[in-house]
Image (tube, rainbow, N blue to C red; front, top):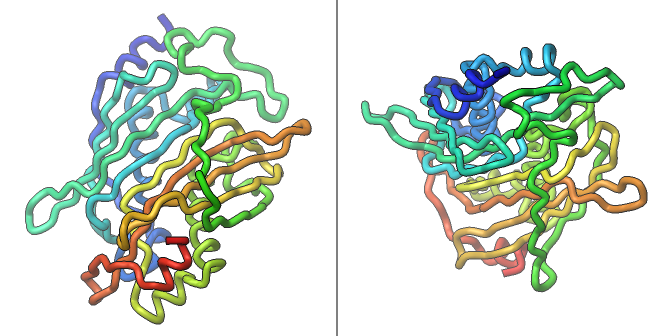
Length: 305
């Protein structure tokens, strides 16, 4: 049966690899930002597909199938630093029926001992490409058929709205080609970029801009967890409406914000993605060390606490 061997390998084998975070993710001291750690998770997933002989290029060029990451979530347990060799494990999770789901763990070696720095979960589907009016390359995907979708959408699950008004950023942007893949589709990495920028814009709007606190107090936002789920496709040159809202404040140490993205299509508002990011603040103590701090009064006021 076509693809049966490859699918079996994909859904039963474990991939272990080593990677280095890209220097673009290094903005403060030697630390790596959350989205570039989540990029490592996606890169590891693509390696896992490739190891099963289902690499991105083979699927797209020979069968017209696009690997579409529809959910990426993770917890950062310890800060990752530039030049650290990251050992990544990709383990299939068979509990998801309509998508391909995997657990991601990352380790680094410190003081000659392995330290777990990240745990995450990532989900993917196979989108049947119809971009640029090109014909389908297959009408029978064999064993892969349960994971093939015509639109590449995620679960479509609803989003819980805030019970009362909360500090919110409203931001509108036109989707550029360089945040897309498959010739037309806004990809997971693009949404992660938008979430980080929405966070920075929100802080600036609320008078607690990242630069202001970094230069004035040596405070830098610290992100212990983040997640993004694609609900429906969004396309190149569409106008994306983003709402970034404070959802919860936990004492004076953490706050959670949601990001929801919409497009206007065929006279209706389409909810295309949702995400969440948990925030704290770390004080830079030296070029090597940092420590979590409690929110000051101006931060608490800015986040509506």
